[in-house]
Image 1 (tube, rainbow, N blue to C red):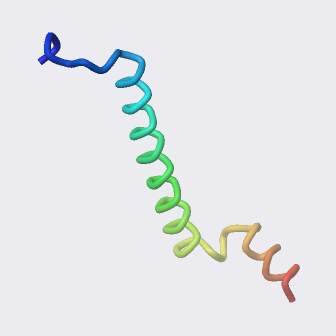
Image 2: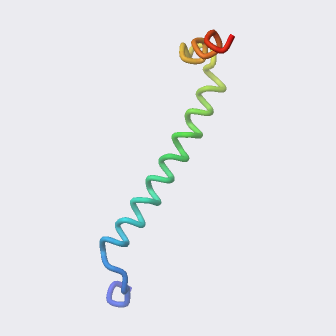
Amino acid sequence: MRSRSRSPFHLRALRYSLLILSLLFAGGVVFLGITNMTKVEADPLVDYRGVSQN
């Protein structure tokens, strides 16, 4: 498989790094969403946003 691959190493590394970054970003968004839903009362930023909006 290695002798058949035509793409250079940096292109494959870039492709894998973009995939890993996208997975980390999606995981971070899901993690922040879950923590915001479960820990709304414990998060001071949510209270600050509520006060600033009202």
